[in-house]
Length: 92
Image (cartoon, rainbow, N blue to C red):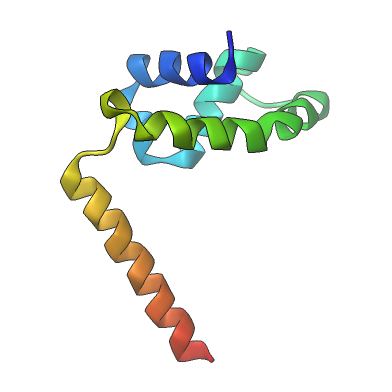
C-alpha cells in the first residue's frame, strides 16, 4: 500500500484520528510496524525516516472531501492558530 492508501485505511477505520496528529501517528505506527505497547529504537528510526512523507500525505488526504474536517472544527483550528500568533507577538 502507498502512504496515502495506508492513511485512508486508518481514517476510514478510525475517523476520530483526523483531529489529532499525535493519535494518528501512534495509530499509524501500531498498524504499519506492529507496535502494541512500546516501540524499539529500530522501529522508531524507521518511522522517523518516513514521518515527513506520512505528514505530507496526511495533509493531502485531509484535503479530500471524504476526509475533510467539519466546518466548525476547521474554523476552531484557525482561531487557535490566531491565538498563538497573538501570544507570540506579545512576547516580542
